[in-house]
Image 1 (cartoon, rainbow over the protein chains, first blue to last red):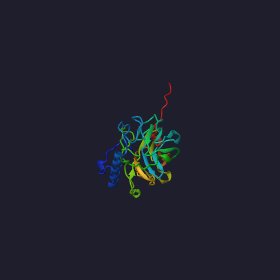
Image 2: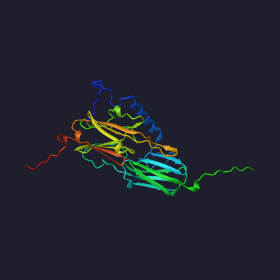
Image 3: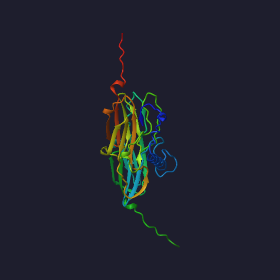
Image 4: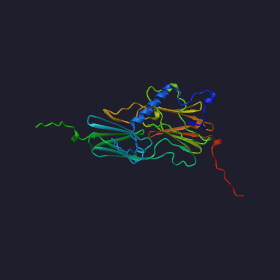
Length: 165
Length: 139
């Protein structure tokens, strides 16, 4: 990013400043592919493992894992007051919703370049197994929300015998 | 975590966001490095940069100004959720981005604060170039 008027720098023999090394190029390509294939489409109407909010809403990226009797969910929510985040749990679904307020919104006397997402978000995450809604903890630290859920004892899988005639 | 940087065209006399300028080799990260989203806002007396860097910490953050380039680098410790990963939508890696400052900014007064995963950098303009309102007095 530059904080000067845009100027091409070919006249002085310099290379384009944004691809100074092959490492930068490789990292940037990895990041683009990673984002393209891993992020669900916003407002997608097709069947999706993860339900989205209203079309046009942004939704936080998440990680989800399970281990033993627990399910772990982590969401990136930078710049959000924990008081503006709602975490609700039903037996088989975790819903994270809230609103991200813009820190630059009050500026009216100049220009603004915006890359971050603002406004309300709502993400319903179907859980791989039923959980106990009473045993859920949520912690917000450095812009990352971590939710720990405990699987419901009744949700344990069982072997189903195949009957024969 | 990051988005491709699409820059909006600005007038010729205004600061213009663009791709990262240069990266100090000494701080090259061994793993992936991410370019954080940034909002740039002209507040009159200063330009404010609001950078999303979830998961970083103020202690691991390096904000430096050298040769007209303001560089931001944050180390992010690898953190993986325990157990079997079912969904992984964002990667963990360091953040790095650079901003080339033009004329008219007071580099000695640059201030930065990190709060709730967001780094905010205040770049004040020199007093001589700050916009000021001229009062029109009735004759």
